[in-house]
Image 1 (cartoon, rainbow, N blue to C red):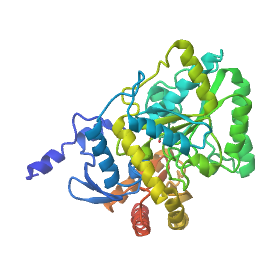
Image 2 (cartoon, rainbow, N blue to C red):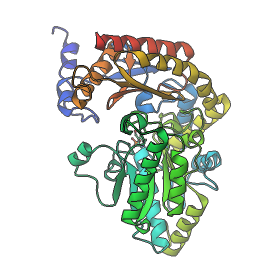
Image 3 (cartoon, rainbow, N blue to C red):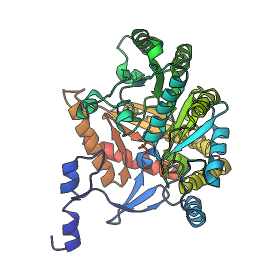
Length: 452
Ligand SMILES: Cc1ncc(COP(=O)(O)O)c(C=O)c1O
C-alpha cells in the first residue's frame, strides 16, 4: 500500500463502536464512510455513488439534499438554537408541532409528548401507561405484550419488546413484565394446511390465551408496528388488527401503535394505521417525521388517556417526566417544515402513484431461482431469499446468502437492508420512476451475481 491515505483506510476504525455491525470487523475493516448525499443517492469517501434503497434505516423520506429541511434547521438555529421544553417553559415551534401532529393523528382528541428517538417514543408510551394505571388504582396492570421479531428500539425495555430469543439471551432480556407472542407472518409461520383465516384465528387465539393465562388485570399494553420491517416486512393477514384491537379494548389493554417506520407516507397514507384501518390508543412516531434531518420523536396519546395523566399530574403536583432534548426546537422546526412539504406535495399520494410501478418490478422477482417470496405495500418491499443447496431452511445459509447479496448490491451501487432471510427495500419516498427502475435493475443483477 503506497498511498498513505489508502493505508489508513485499510486499518479499520479503532475507537468507534458501530451498532448492528460485528465490532471486530469495524476495527479491522473500514466501514462504508459516507460523505455526501443528493436525492436518493449517497456518495462514499472514495467518490462511489450508491442508490440508497434503505433510506438509511427507512427514515430519509425526502432523500439527502432537501433544501427546505436544511433551511428550516438553519433558521431555527439562528432564532433560538435550544431551550428545554419542561418546567412550564417551551418555544413556539414545539407548541405548533404538537398542534399539527394532534390534528393529523387518527387518534381522537390527541395530545403529544416529545422525545428524541423512536426508542424513547415507545418507552415513554409504556411509562405513560403505568402512570395512568397507578392513578386508576391498578399499579399491577403493567405487563406488555409484543411480538417476537419486531423491533421497537435499543433501550433495555424496548429491546425486550422485540427481537429473537438469541438477542434476548445475549443481553439477558427480557426484563420483567414482557409477554411475547408470534409474528402474524403467514408465509413463514403458517402451518402447511392452514388457510389465512385459520392462521388469523390462531394468532388472535394466542393473544387471548396469554390474556387468560396472565389475567387482563396484569396487562397494560400491546405494542406492535402496523407492518414489521424488522421481521422482514410482515404484512398482517386480513382482519388481524381489527380483531386484535377489539380484543384489547374488551380487556382494557392499551394498543400502542409503533409508527416509527410507517409514519408519514411510507404505506401510501399518512400513517400505517390509516392504511390498515385501525385506531390506536397511543402512537409512537419518529424517523420520517423530520425526514431524519434532526432527531425528534413523539408519543401521541388519546384524549381519554391524557385526561387520566393530567389528573394524576395534578394529584402529584407535577408530571414527573421530561427529557432534555425532548422536543428540541431545531427538530421541531424541521418536523414542521416536513409536515408542510408532506401537505403541499401530497407525499402519501405520490407514494400511491409510484407504488404500482414499484410493485410490478418487485413482483417480477418472484420467479427468480433465489427468491422464496416477495411482499410489498406502498413504497416498501421484501424479497425473501431461498437458502441454497440441500439445507434449504438453515438460518446460517440464509444469512450467508443475504450477506453476499448485500455485498453484490453494494458493488453495483445499491444499498439494501438484509433482515433475517429477506432483503427489505424501502427507498426515500421522493424516488422517481426512473430511479425505481434503476434500483431494481441493480437489485436483479445482484441477485444474479449471488446465484451465479
Ligand atoms: C419500528 C421501530 N420502532 C422503534 C425504533 C427505534 O427508533 P430509534 O432507533 O430512533 O430509537 C425503530 C428503529 O429502527 C423502529 O424501526
